[in-house]
View 1 (tube, rainbow, N blue to C red):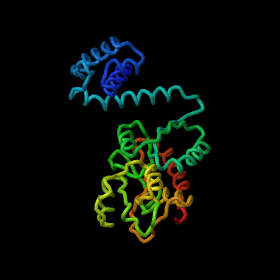
View 2: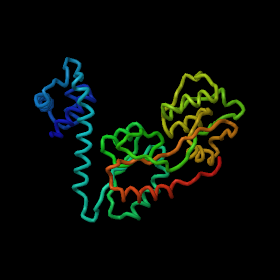
View 3: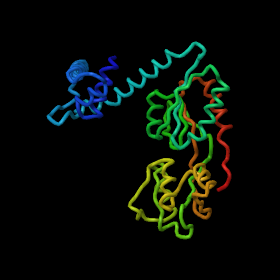
Length: 281
């Protein structure tokens, strides 16, 4: 497995140019060309179509991208684990959804104190990426709102959150400023059906926690997780509309079933103690 060639291939795929790929991987354009040609020879397939404007992935190249990405990630993980000091007997690749890291920061500190021989590689991401990396084995455990349920992955609710309606403007006229916020493929239609508002705003937000900033800045209304709404309400920036429908939106811990069962039990126990009921907003 030639990780250098894989990195070069991905740089060319992302930039659309062998010359720009050369800058990214700190090599000459001729070296990039040679690496790609050798990779194509080993795979028995052409990966790029080249022209004066740059390069474009072939269908074979498009199919190779996920495998190359996974190989590079697995190599980086292996290199990290091999270089750990001897005091670390176990390691964990952990991912948390961006919006949950204000709570996960405290949990990470508890884990470090309770399990001092555990080395952690932590990352933040959107639920789509975390689900993918967990399925591919580059993450051992994730905490997120929108899991994908698989046979090789276990999932357990750690907190029964809800989506609640909030506004940064006049509560009496929230309908006029309502903006749909993307929280997953199934919950959006449920919200639309319950509140009976057509999508007249011409805008859908898929910004995670930053959606709350939009509601504040534009005095708009929309649905946020209660944990997030509580923080903004405490600062006087958003108001919850208590008469509006709420929607169950639990937080899940997910882990690979082939992970260390004892370690996972310790981590789950600490998670359940860390996620506590927020005050009413």
